[in-house]
Amino acid sequence: MVEITPAEHAAAVKVFGSRLPLAERYVEHLATSGMERGLLGPREVPRLWSRHVLNCAVVADLIPDSSRVADVGSGAGLPGLCLAIARPDLVMTLIEPLERRVTWLNEVVDDLGLQNVEVIRGRAEQVVGKVEVDVVTARAVSALTGLAGLTIPLLQGSGVVLAIKGRSAAEEIEKAAKQIRRLGGKETSVVTAGEDVLEEHTTVVRIVV
Image 1: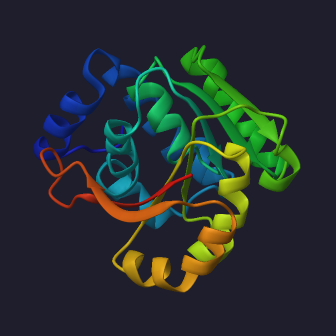
Image 2: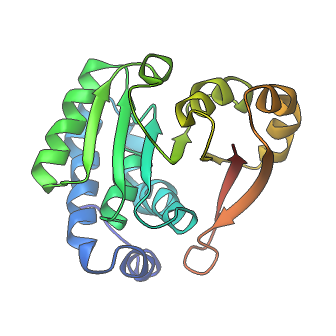
């Protein structure tokens, strides 16, 4: 079992509610097969809850009810699987180009019995027009200058991009501003999630298209 501190457990109860056992099973997958297959490094295991799973799951608060969500560059399911577990009302499409990651994601989705998740193998630009989504999420994919071109087109003219970022979020927005506007971004801002449950909140770049 991956150790969880009392503070992390309290936060996890608030975020996942009755679906906490699913989140715990997902974390076990990350710590075992996920690490073995190189989806994350051994150094990350002690901080899976705080730095990864809870950090991603709180973004669910920024997503409207029953949204169709595409997660670009899903990798180990961060944030895609965290959102699918926290919010069974969301219809999640995980987009990931690497076959070994897709295989792992499908195994985890099957094991957890997540009915609201589809995994697509491909690059984001190959999927444009093939999925209908209201929200696009991404984490640790690329700087906003590159990420804008991977995420905004998936919305086909209407919706919201939620990109989990760090302290350099405002700086990234500045650098990518022209490109975001050119792609149809109407309003770009830095928002936060999880202030009421996490010791360190999650910083998100929100682009309204």
